[in-house]
Length: 248
Length: 193
Image (cartoon, chains in turn blue, cyan):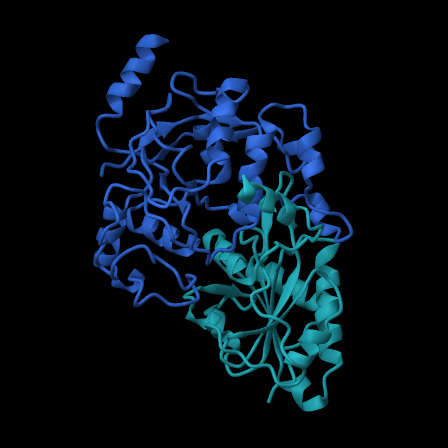
């Protein structure tokens, strides 16, 4: 096991996306009884969140995503507001994760790279790993670590990427920024949401959950459930997923 | 943590609609002013019942009600069609003739042109109605723009929130109805001149 972990760390030294899965995602809040275990075919995921430098290259190549040219239906008014100008990062670190990007913008970036945004099941599968286990989600210590980050206010200046890789060789899934997923509009949508007299989800439900994974996961779900596709939030970035191996 | 608590509160509001999915405040009756971006800026190909591929702006020039559905839905979707038909029926003659309806399926695999034609016949929908299907990715985009949330569930069902959005002649959102409630705001929006 230790050897495998060392090999994974070594693999992280090259920049291509990491292979994740196949695996089974067991949601803490299954949307229906048939969705307690969701098989996830193997996919590839960026080892790091998309950085300001990466995104700058994108808007230079595809100018309709510059903040002074983008169509307002795709972004809120503070899209890329941290940058000095439409094609100038200014004081923002090129190696920090790009934030204040909408779901539309994140999707466009990933399509440009030949990929797509990860789906919820994929992101959660990758994010359940700690430094040496692919599924650490039942470990209270791992959960406490994730929760400790959620309890911090977002720092005014985002640090650069570069956290320790997890067992898949992927960095910074927790601890830097929240991340867009492709199917965020599916969050919190259950059979009950067809019935307007019932709430979709409630804190009491989460508090009553016996599963130790539930609380940190619930916060992510609540966050996703509150998002709008045009939102450009200072603590929300993204990374891309791929259906086949790609090189950068 | 304050953020998290605010999120919990938002998630607990008891609404089937997403907490922040109300981009347009209810417009003043009879004179909706749309200043937002046009939905017709989206390049989003739709395959309609005739088999033609059209753009989202297929009804450009007409006040339009737009929503999403899936054909094999047996409960909420017929109610949705009834609600929209009911809203149209409340309009004065000229407005009723001018209004259009665009229903986009998020189930392209099963809602083929043939199936869409069947549905139109089943519900006796006239030429003002367009039934169409979008690819999975495009359906996700349109749902995001309309503030409709859905997920594909095992067994071919979709769990989804219902919303009907009224567009002006240029594709700007002028009103919306979340859930299957009272379509009064839509009726008002369709009478813009």
